[in-house]
Length: 67
Image (cartoon, rainbow, N blue to C red; front, side):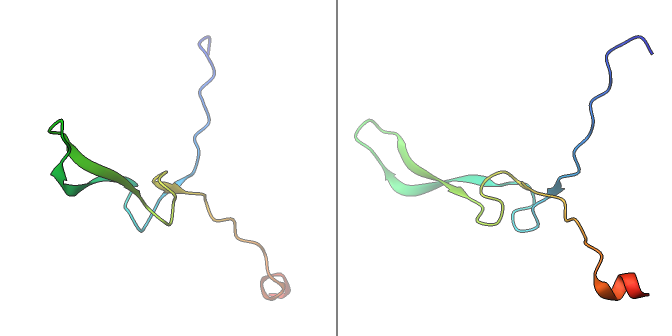
C-alpha cells in the first residue's frame, strides 16, 4: 500500500441516555429587546455533552479465573 496509513477506529459507544444527541437548545419563552429568542443549552448528564461513553473494559474476576 503506497498511500497514507489508515487511521485506527475508536470503540466509543453511543450514550444510552441521550442516543447521541447530547446537547439541545431550549427556549425560555419570550424574546429580548432585540427580538431574539432567549435560549439555553442543555447537556446530557450521563455523557456531559459528548454523545458517547467510553468502552467498558471487563476485568477478570476471581470467579472467572477459577472456572
